[in-house]
Image (tube, rainbow over all chains, first blue to last red; front, top):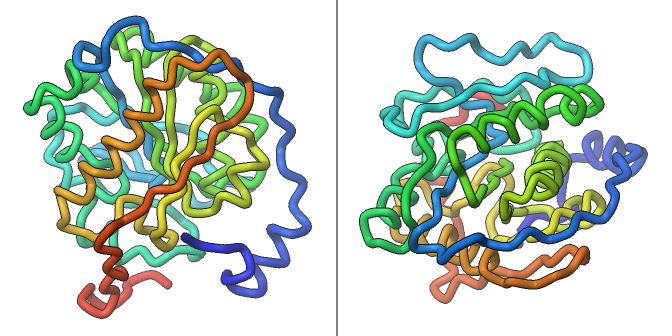
Length: 160
Length: 102
């Protein structure tokens, strides 16, 4: 596990001064049926982009708040990483994209009957967003809409 | 910032009635954005599922997240649990290719 005190001085100073967005308490949702019949979607903030899709834009002030849909049948190692942060070691994800979007593990759990299905699409964000207003206002509702359209009952989220 | 991004999106998904659980490598930050369920993993930033090329390890992390989704709790209190690795091998960064971005 990482600790703020272990991070680089410049990053630490930024994090200590940063005004974190206030979040109202979230009522916990309940599974509508047993997990073994539920459809599960993955959401990564690793800035992964399917081949041919536009990359995340590292020049947007406050962070690129857009998202990319990732088809469940994509070859996971062909995803391109466009995360702009230097706060983490990129070599893990470069060696194995499953660290950002664990599609192989998800499919193994489907094959083992532990979950019902993988959602037909997953979601990729570029997590380095210091001005999250547009993320909350524009992107989050669209993410929710995609999950609903795809019939996802569970979403597992992976920051990097 | 990834942890705030994930936490904010997670909250909105859960509010829509979809059950969510997230990984965290920085529980100090995750606590500030109050997601409903988070699993604190003993891995460094950039390695949320642990070792690259370790499908069994990745499955163990996903299983724990899915277990948390089955809590059936009526609550608004964020639940942050720890993921303990029995064979807690440190991430072998030395075996990875030379960094292309630092």
